[in-house]
Image (cartoon, rainbow, N blue to C red; front, side, top):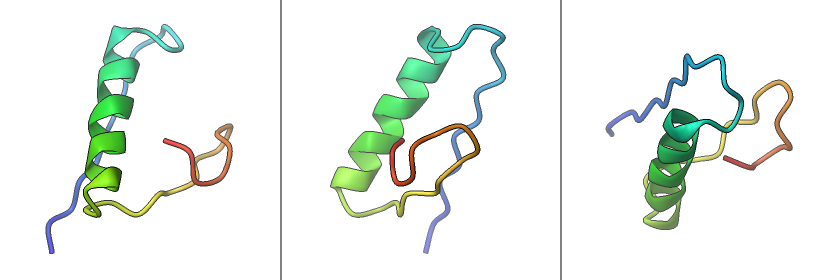
Length: 47
């Protein structure tokens, strides 16, 4: 199984980099390739 990891290192919350990573991970989740990982400060199960 492949591992997909999205890392955002921008100082701007919801900046372009974060939006692109979130969209890519959302597409992977829809395709069944990714299980949601709750992160501190994020609602559980949301990417």
